[in-house]
Amino acid sequence: MFISFDSSGRPKSLLARIAGALCAALAFAVALMFSLVLFAVLALAALAFWGYWRWKTRALREAMRGQRFEMPGGNAANDAPRGATIIEGEAVRVEEDRPRLK
Image (cartoon, rainbow, N blue to C red; front, side, top):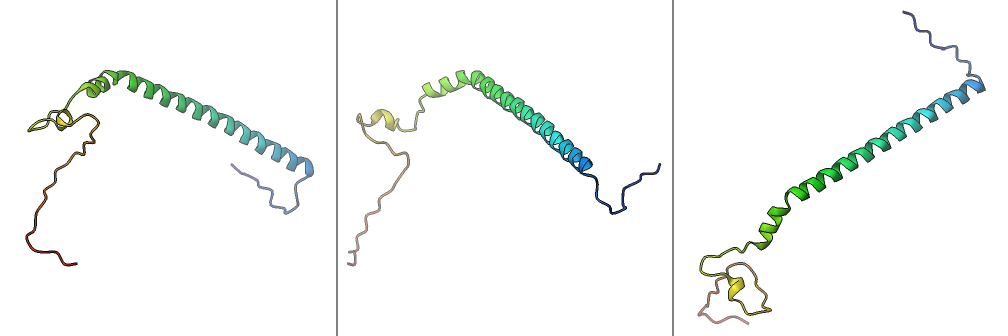
């Protein structure tokens, strides 16, 4: 098999350059069209998966929303006055006997 490349160095005709540019533009447009279709299909598949996942986990989310966590030694949320801000955590205050320097 013999492949002949035009290596004569002379420029192609105007008609050949226009035909080449049109073919390149057409190939780019077709590639762009297929990529847009592919991205649209992938976006719809992702949206369908997200909707299916939300639908299947709705009972779990409702159960978690209604669940109350019991803390050892009582629940601070139930013991606090209405409207109080509760900060979770534990702190120890150490009183020092020595005077402070000013």
